[in-house]
Structures are given as structure tokens and as C-alpha cells.
Image 1: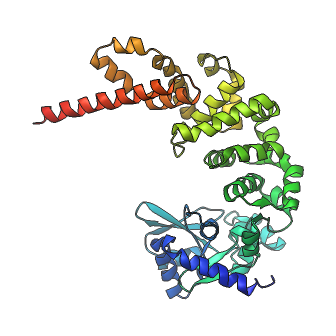
Image 2 (image 1 turned 45 degrees about the horizontal axis):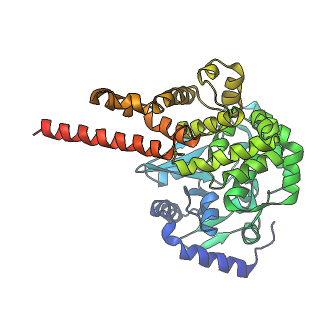
Length: 409
């Protein structure tokens, strides 16, 4: 049984959540209300609650309840059960999906043994528990907070509010054991500490350093998911330095480790990375995100320039992009096309001699916008040239629109 959270702290943060109530999705509140009216416990939980408490806009609102998945499906309309090992309920509301999870608890040894003998049972993930047991199964204390916006109640079994106040990222349980249990927690710890500007608690930091080799056992798709989230951070350069300092790059992205070990290359790469947001890449699009990162990397390690075609069949480059960063083949194909097209952007005089039809074909090429951003990122074209090409695309686009309007009259 955990010690109770300081009453004054509960009151303080309850008031904060009350003040940002308008930021809570009413659809999520509606789901909570249905479950509560049916006699179940139901709370917002995890990152959504955490972000509200630190004045960030939540990306989504997850829900936890003591209702079993089948009970949720009966009480909440437009929902369906997903997963076999870890059964969850997804409730569809327009273009949004809300995740509803039943409280879990650790399985007892005899329960695991029984589950392993039963091919229709899926080990410890589906042993339902109570809210306190569920709290201690979560990764960090700040992610273990439950909030009921209807009754304005915070449940804090792991002293997450204290760590919110002290801006500390702390693992629930013994850090080394929890990192071995799921090595991706190392990446999440570094990313969340940078996102929230929190300090990683010393024993957790030490555990990351000592257990970093466990990351090699993690699934590549999960690592890719974290890299994407890292490169969307507002202060990405600090996050990259932290991963280098904690040995993460050495373990799972050796190409970045080699780059960051060279002070001049490190500073050059970080300079490019800072420019990514300035140039205007759409980081919600993973193709644009990874293209920007790759172009920054190549110009850092080849400052005198390079022939992009030489990397298309390069086994070493393939290992870096596919195995280290987890970039998909289609994303790589688009990057190569965009990088190849940059040479056309350096031939403005040739372009101006072309007829209108060929000019339009060029500025509406499939990779034109991405190529333009990449060229500007690496200073392959000047600011004036960047604006020239943007204006040409707008000019020819307006002409096309005008001609279409006339033709339809």
C-alpha cells in the first residue's frame, strides 16, 4: 500500500486541472460519464493528465477503468476490442479513437504457468486488477496519475504529483529491472525529460548507462517510433546530446555515435538540425522528417558535396537508414528522388528558357517542394533562389486556376 499524497499538493493540482478543464476533449468526458453511470470506475490516465498538469496540450486522452473489455463494449457505443495479448477497447468518435484499458496487475507465478499451458490464454498482460495495482505497472511516476474530470478527483499512488512539482522523471520500481523488462523505456525517459524539461532521477540515469546494451533486444519498429518522436521535439539538439552522452547512439545508431564523437561534425549536424524547423519541413510527415535528417547527415559527413546516386546501392548506407533509423523503403525512394531533383533547382537560367508547359511540369514535379526544402536546408540554393522557386510555383498555379475557370465558363 502506498503512502497518501500530500493533501495540499492534491488540492493545488486539482485546482490546476479545474482551470484547464476546457482543454479536455468532451468526447473523452462523455465516455467516462457512460462508464461511471453504469457503476464502473473510469479515469483519464497517463500522458494526457501529465501534459495538462505541466501546461502542455495533450495529444490524446487515454481512459482506464475497472470494467472488463466486454463490459466496456456493451456500455460504450461505437467501440471494438483490439489485441490478443493485451486486450484494449477503442472507441471511435468521428476521426478520433479513444483507448480504453482495464486496470491490470502483475500475474502470480502460478497464473503465468497456467496461462503458458493454455494456448488460448495470453500470459500476464490480461490479469485484471485494481487502480493501485495498475498504477505500479506503469513506467514513470508522472505517467501514473489518474484524473476524473467529472468528480474532479486525482488518484496518485506513485507520488507523481511530487515529481511534477520537482520536475523529476522517476521510474516506478527498481530502474534496472524495469529497463530490462522493456528497454524502450530508456528512449522514452530521455525523450520525456527533454520534452518536459525534467531532470532524469540519478538512479534511473545510472541504470540507462549500465543497461544500454539491452536496447539491442528491442523491436526496430518501436525504436523507429521513438526516433520520429525525438525529431519532433522543439529542442532536439539537447535530446541528441543526451542520447550520445548516455551511450544510446553507440548501442543502436553507431553512425550517429561516430558523427557525435567528432566535435566539428557534431556542431555542424546540430546546426543543420536547428534549421529543420526554420526551413519549414512538415515533421508530421515521416518522409519529410527522415529526408531532412538524412540530408543533414550526408552534408555533415560529406561537407564538400556528394553524388546522391552513389548511396542508392550502398550497403553501408542501407544498414544506417534501414537498421539503425528504421526508415521505410518507400521513404528512402522519395528522398533519393528529391535529392536527385535538386540539381534542376540550380539551373534557373535553363528553366527561364523553357516554355510555360515545361516550366509548369517542373514546379509541380512530385518532389519539387521537398527538394526545395532540402536544397535550402543545406544552403545549396540561396534565400533569393528559394523565394524565386516558391513564387514560380504560385504564379504558374494561379495561371492554371485562371485557365480552368475560363474553360468552365
